[in-house]
Length: 222
Image 1 (cartoon, rainbow, N blue to C red):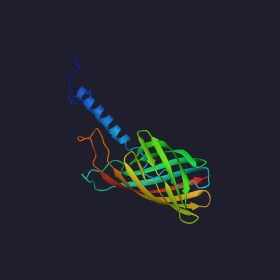
Image 2 (image 1 turned 30 degrees about the vertical axis):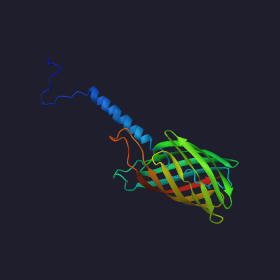
Image 3 (image 1 turned 60 degrees about the horizontal axis):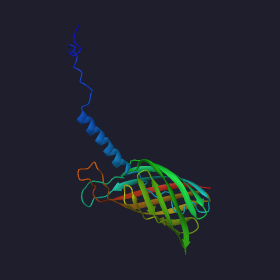
Image 4 (image 1 turned 180 degrees about the vertical axis):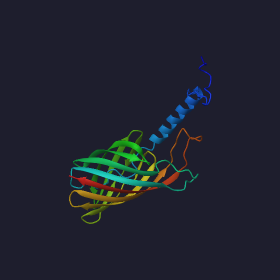
């Protein structure tokens, strides 16, 4: 009987599929490191929900899409995380002057994630000024939404924010358009500053950099 360890003539010898201990350790550490770095990018890259969109309704569903581009870094050509295209969906409900809701998002710039948000808008002269806090798995942010009416069916809005996410600081500017009582459309642009850390880079830090986002949202209030 031919020994099991001998190669069969005309056939290449089979290689062992058993991984060495060092290879398994390196693979495991690399996988965990990549996952940890990726999860830090789990934050919506466009305003969610759009400030002022709910208007006189008590509830709102919204969807949006965005694309984020990185600019030249101040220390390197490396681009910070949070670059690419993403989509999102949210639900917002009003309790008096306060809003509470949640959303989910997925894409190249934010992977797959979700979170909850709470805030409120209050009239200050002719404008509306408020606050919003939001968070999910491994991300959190706080912002100050502000809206300025542009007639009866449009408004200018912004929501400067800071947070633990792919980009530390964010300044969006958008214009909302109300179509009748229920529908809303809102194009938006934003500039973002990012400086993140990661255990998988030799230096442990990513360079400071800027990113720019273009977004478009649509909502239905009732």
